[in-house]
Image (cartoon, rainbow, N blue to C red):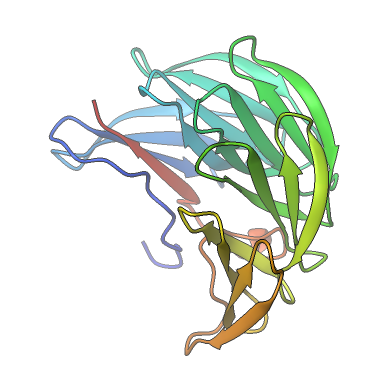
Length: 240
């Protein structure tokens, strides 16, 4: 679509998969059949849906509604919203722990992360992080969560068993999307404003800048660019 930015899609392959796309400007979620490339359902979400995550096994999809400060939980068997969970202001990125038991929600307008217990669909913890958090990812074993703070140029490092921030990594001018290597030793961060990627050692905390040719590298929309976005906003896929 004109003006749309490609969004991350979850891993997997198969003939009966589903792709879930948040449409920020019309407050819906599109469910796409990955085999026929057709929209099989359009689900009314909250206001200005952004981040989306698919639970292990694919039974539930979690939608961060930026404009209504809540997370919607979709049951994938009937494509119905089963419940909504209030969080804090302007939730953007969401990340599921590897075991699927915790959903971390980056609240860009509150400088916090809400930790939702997916078994009860209740907020189990509130964690203060940097300014304008936009995205979340986990270490392979789930013991550490990383949060990109686009407004303070940092990655918050969270010990997941204690829900405590144990440190911060440099993120450049405006970190948005990032990935942590499988061995947990390095993080690669898209610095949107500086048009570069930072390679940061998670233990050494040393950063190496890699210039890129395109302006505004991003694997995730930041709070600063949300006003200029057009649907679709983000997507995830699942396969049986």
